Amino acid sequence: MRAAVALGSNLGDRAAILARARAAIGALADTAVVAASPVEETAPLGPVPQSAYLNQMLLVETGLAPLALLEGLLAIERVEGRVRGPRWGPRTLDCDIVLVAGARLREPGLEVPHPELPNRDFWRRELAALGIVPGEAGW
Image (cartoon, rainbow, N blue to C red):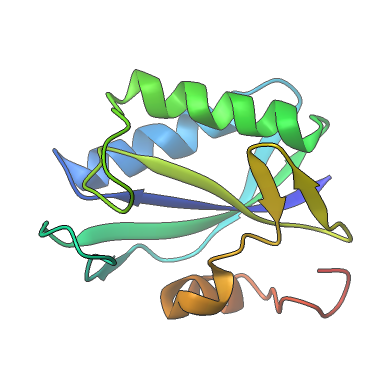
């Protein structure tokens, strides 16, 4: 399965956290990071005052099912000290499955395409950097 995975961080050493997340995702069972967009600094979204984010999109090839991939991503967030607080609040690491090639999913805890994709210009720029256009060529 091919998936587009978004990374974001606005607490701690953001660049180092994204680097560790890339490595940890590539170390998941039967999973490889095959491409990565440039890292981009963006303003935070939502009503909670906080510092800017570093964001990046990864193209991942995996034999994991979408929910298993999500569980792996959530475990990586926890290793990086992610504490669930207010929605759109600050975080050490956020990992989101944005797209899965050829799939639409709506399961508890996972909706693909990610419902916030239309609201995040930076995700669309990062996907474009990977040659991914939502709704085209199998995406």
